[in-house]
Image (cartoon, rainbow, N blue to C red; front, side, top):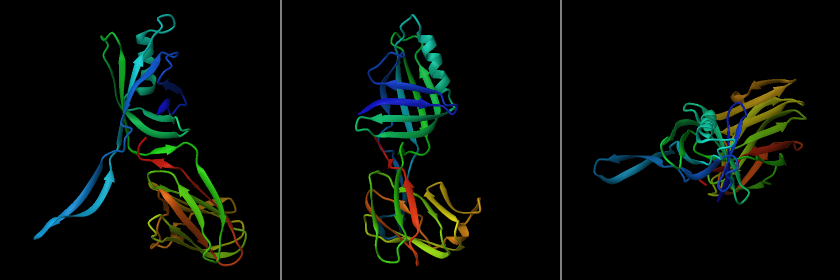
Length: 273
C-alpha cells in the first residue's frame, strides 16, 4: 500500500502528500493510473490464412490522476491558499517528478508533465484532481543496484537476480590497467537465450570504458587522459544492448590476459504498483 507521495519540481521544491495526515492541509483521496498501462499490439493478416500474425507491441504513456483533498484550518490556511500552493506544483504544461513510498520499503520515481489541474470551486468538500502524463510509463526504484566483477578467460559467470517487472538497461564501467584489444559481455536472461556485446578497440592502461544500455540513453564512451569520447565505432553492429529481465540473469565478461575489474549499475523498473 502507498503511504506517501512526494511531488518535486525542477527548481527543487517538494510537496509531501499522505493518506492519513492532514497537518499541511492536503490529503490523498485517491490515485488512478498505477496499474500496468495498456499495450498496443500490432499484427498482420494474410490471404487464405485464418487469424493474424503477431508483429510488435509497445506500451502507452502512463496517465496518473491525483485526487487531493483540501483540509484548511482557517487560521493559517484557507481553501484558496491551499489551492494556490497546488498551482505552484501542478500548473498545466509544467514538469513534475513523483516519488511513491510503498509499505514494503519500496521507493520509486516517475516523471511527467501536468495535463490538467481541476477543482469544483463551489463544492463544500473541495477536491483537486491533477492529471499527469508520464511518457516513460515505468516506475524506477530510487536507489540503484551495483555489482562488481572481473573479466575471465573461462566460462565462469556471475548471477544477477533482477527484481523489477520491466526489463532494464545497465551502465557498465571498466577501468583499463593494461593493453587490451577487445572484450565481450555475454548475457543470458531467464529464458536461456545467450546474447553478447562485442567491443574491439586499442585500449591502453589508464583508459576507462563506459557502456550504457538503457533505452533512450544508449552510449559507448572511452575516457583517455581525462578526455571522454564516443567509442560507438568499437561496438560490433551485431551486438545486443544488454537488458536485465525479471528473474535470474547470468553475465560473463570475457577478455584474454590478466583479469580487469568492472562495475555494473542498474535501476529496478516496475510496470505497475
